[in-house]
Length: 168
Image 1 (spheres, helix red, strand yellow):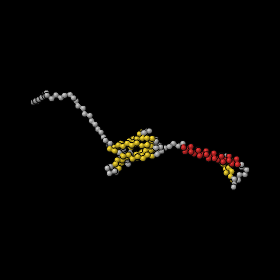
Image 2 (cartoon, helix red, strand yellow; image 1 turned 30 degrees about the vertical axis):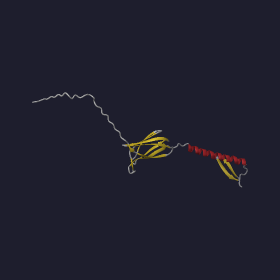
Image 3 (cartoon, one colour; image 1 turned 90 degrees about the vertical axis):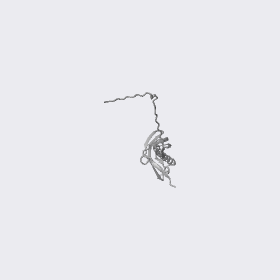
């Protein structure tokens, strides 16, 4: 069996066959140096990759209404609010789709409103993910009230006056 030796020259490590006088101690020391360099490179690589900040998540989806035959109709121009760790606003496009970008992980409530329609849903946003929602709008009961006030002063109904003017 041939002997293999490692030789260090500056920062380079060379391997050679037939060691001509290298002792077992020299071989072990060289192997330890190679292992230390490999470990250092591995740790540096892990630290460099581990230091990167996770990208924020996003929430996206579609706004629709359901017909009696269970067909869906998208609702463009719907105003949306995402409330939780922060407050974001959006509006659905012509296809009824919406996107909230740069959303930190956490619990949120999404509210959608269009004329006569509303939807609310709770959502848990996870780190570095895309949450997909399908929000079904329901008819929003519109309540309107009017207040009528009257004057309580009595009206004179027994006395009448009459004036006639005749001109020539």
